[in-house]
Amino acid sequence: MVRTKSLFICAECGTSHPKWAGQCDGCDAWNTLVEEPNVESTPRGQGSAKGCKIEFVDLRGSEERTSRLSTGITEFDRVCGGGLVPGSAILVGGDPGIGKSTLLLQVTAALANRDHKALCVYISGEEAIDQVRLRADRLGLSNAPVELATATSVRDISATFDGTKNAHVVVADSIQTLYVDNLDSAPGTVAQVRASAQALIRLAKVRGFALFLVGHVTKEGMIAGPKVLEHMVDTVLYFEGERGHKYRILRAVKNRFGALDEIGIFEMMDTGLAEVSNPSALFLADHGREISGACVFAGNEGSRPMLVEIQALTAPTNFGTPRRAVVGWDAGRLNMILAVLETRCNLSFSSSDVYLNVAGGLRITEPAADLAVAAALISSLNDVPVPSNTIIFGEIGLSGEIRPVGRSDRRLKEASKLGFSQAITPNLQRKNGGKKKGASTYNNLTVREFTNLNELLDDICAEPAIPHFSSANRKH
Image (cartoon, rainbow, N blue to C red):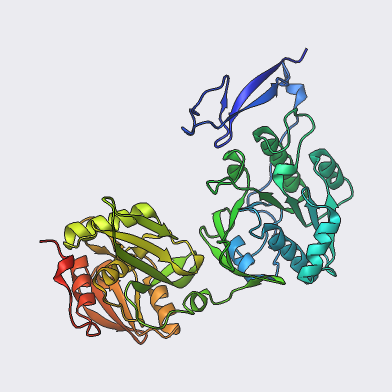
């Protein structure tokens, strides 16, 4: 008889445990073990006659290579690496109501309208067909040749595509609603999510269609289900955005067929998601007048240079422990910059609350924003505005030195294209092996190169727009 016993699976990393424990041994997470029934179905005494020989092919392949499927949505194709690869599995995650279903419905409709030979299938496990049609009418996609279906059984989906159905793109919305009927657990559990995803990915590899799996996220912002689900797919896309902002960011955190950390910018409108072709000009639309605590950072997101405004505010605190609030940046890195400014530049932030914000709802992860954050903090603390025609980038070390960063030419070129006239950067010559520093000219930009934070402090506080620099902010 088949022996049934229970295992406890970690919802974060997928590690199995023979008994329940408060903490997972694999990822050290607390209270994440979920009980799942385990059916021991491994055949005993498997001999050589049970298997079949594996067929090997030449690495060079044939002359005709499989081309990518271009959806016609430039921002989406950019994030995917230039288009959809046949046989690939793409996991799309995001907060509820952020627009995942809307985006994928627009993608399938755009591909079906662009290439009439491409068969696109949208399988919904959460909504009825009439609900999907209502959304398509609102988006103006009701005439797109996209085939709809509602199903939650993986066996039914596999039987459909193992038969005569030959699709090019399949969307499963969402993976948490699908189930495999040979497991006793409920849909959405760790075992069901993993088994359903594995069955659909195997089907996509065999039949050669691009598979989209929509995944829900947890309160921490991670895709719900075991972490191993992200290792099973070829591409992981996160759809990000604040509910108070109309802009949405599609970010690639894993991509076997393209660049990592590539992003696509969309604007949420009544008619759906619209592409944003020039995000730098969009994020800097309200940047014009000079005000203390604001500066422009020249960053890189994937292969795209992007200019965003960083805002800092320092206010006197009434409590013993000052407040540190960050939106769009790493809070730990802000504490590090504050410590370097206090230790190396003798500035005092111990009696001030510090608030840092990246305008537009964008999240910055690269360390090249250190210098712009430091400039915004210095500007706010001393009430000295940074000139609005200046862009800033550079990494800061613990000793107060300003380190060079990659792709400086792209940052300066983008700033020059948008009409900026000055740039504060690390010593660009040092990166190329030289020792020259100071002011230089690049592409109609006056570039001022600094090697440590004290030079930046003296430069900002020496601006003629403010007649004085209060020494009260210096430590004595």
